Image (cartoon, rainbow, N blue to C red; front, top):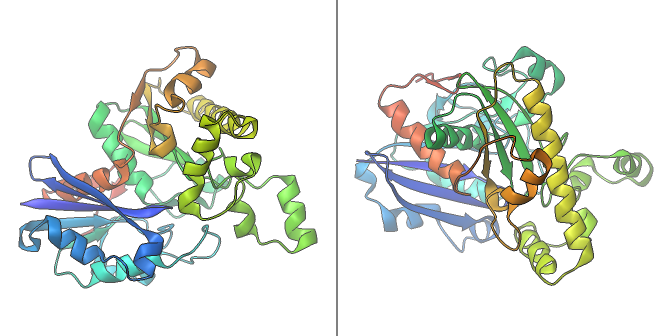
Length: 334
């Protein structure tokens, strides 16, 4: 008996296959471009690794997840659980093709929602402040963080193509800061005054600005989303001053966001969980060490797998199958 979790990420779609005792059997990733061009099939890659007859449940995420606010069976979700794909970063179609494949599988599948203004599970102040706070995989990332640490009051910092920080209080998600309003990621970031002017005066799209507002803006890197992180890190290794400034700035903005979430937590924070391809990085710089320079050992840090989105989704599938009806405050309705 096994469970599958899927993370609809920015640079690719990740899967985790987990045994019924909670052991990770395999984690793999499908590139968006490769999927769109038909060079790789999610179904075929899964079939190589698992007997579908042994899969008891699969939990998946997709895009912003702003069309649903509960964990629901896939066959009860309309429009793939989203209100619109507009304004959500670069659209390649790779994630859509994977989703279409998964719909055809004879596997009981649930969808994880995003965190947004209609999420009853969130603190009303966060819902009032932000129409959207986090995409669905941030719930699965946070669930994996909960499982890994056993903490009830903590902040998850997921730092990769974008940066999203999530506040968990009393074992429930209180709120989060999405990439377009808070800290920089490698690719995405908040829209500052210059970008707002570019939108008004130059006809630039808000989505294009959002997709160039991260560390790459400072490092002056452009190209395919899947390649930008590697290029930034390579430039950093080679001593490029713009790349170093970009990374240092990214870390500063994440530190500010973590500090802000701590302020609004009514309980004492037990620690900070770091994840994502940058948040879990140990070279060419150690992210934990660099961000701790701002906090001066105030927090305990725990680094979890950069594949925590897929792993957490598999954990959600397993626990929902075994009768769990609430995940971090999010209702399960199956």
